[in-house]
Structure formats: C-alpha cells, structure tokens
Image 1 (cartoon, one colour):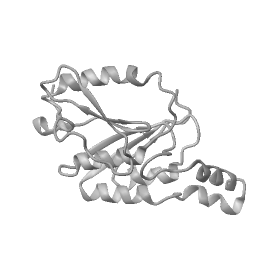
Image 2 (cartoon, one colour; image 1 turned 135 degrees about the vertical axis):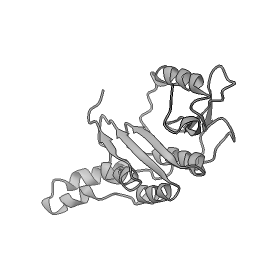
Image 3 (cartoon, helix red, strand yellow; image 1 turned 90 degrees about the horizontal axis):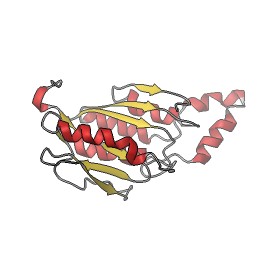
Image 4 (cartoon, one colour; image 1 turned 30 degrees about the horizontal axis):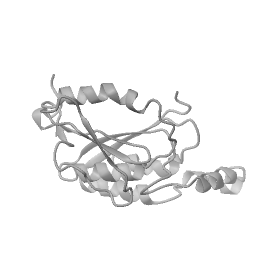
Length: 192
C-alpha cells in the first residue's frame, strides 16, 4: 500500500469523551494499548514514543485499532466531550511536524479547555426568536477555538472537522477551528 508522503507519513489516533485517550501503536505491538489522560486543563503526552508513528511501518496495528474502536465505545452513555483538550493533545503531538487532523464530534464540548456551557447554548437559542439578536447566533460564544486555529496554523497543522450531532452544537464557536486553520467543516445534522 502506498501513502502520500511515503515512509514520512505519520499517524496518531486520539479519542475523547470525558478524558483523552492516546493509543500506543508501535510496530512491535500485536495490539494497540490505550493510555488515558484525565487532567483536561493541563494536557500532556503520556508516552514519548509510539503515539505518532509511521503509517507504513505500523499499518497492521493501526488497522487493528480502527477495527476495535467501534466496539470499545459502543455501550458508552457519556454525552459530554472535551474537544478542546483533545485538540490541544493533538497539537502537542504534531507541533514538530504539522499535518492534518481529522476531528469527529457529536456533542457540544462541555469539559476541559474551550468548553461551551449549556447555558450559552440556551441563551443563543432564546435570542434566535428576537429578530434584532439573530446575528448573535452566527458569532462564536468564545474565542478559544479561533486562538487554537491560529496556533495550529503556526505549526502548519490544519483541521478537518466532522460534526454529527443529535442535538444543539455551537457551530459558530467550533467553525473557526477548521476554517482558520485551512480545513473544512463537515456538518451532518441528526446523524445516526
């Protein structure tokens, strides 16, 4: 199999809910290993190696993880997200080489860095009934994702953001993460 960039192509997989999950993907492993970071405010990489790995050398381990991921989180009932902290983790992992981040989200980020509160969501929803405040819906509730996008651009990283919510997600606040880093926002409402 050939990859764009050949043997230089690196890959990492990070998942998140109420904590950030890193996966050790070394070529010498028969199965990937998960390491969980629960400190969302002071993000760090728990492993110095085997997080960002050569896609070519570790293809079997990566494919094994991708096959097992749906089953790992199938029965979870968590509907909270620490998207901002997960983006920070990915930034730390890739800051020395840059690259493209594929981020998938299905709920409003309510934990960790750049959290959005449900109160902000309700206020914006209420204001939509008032004609003079409709424009507020199009403005970010916080500027944190704008700052993150600018930081990512500075290290040559871009974000492709896929949002597939069942309920309200503040797209106005999340959109700059993709848009200002040179990526795209893909929105799939009521995805099941």
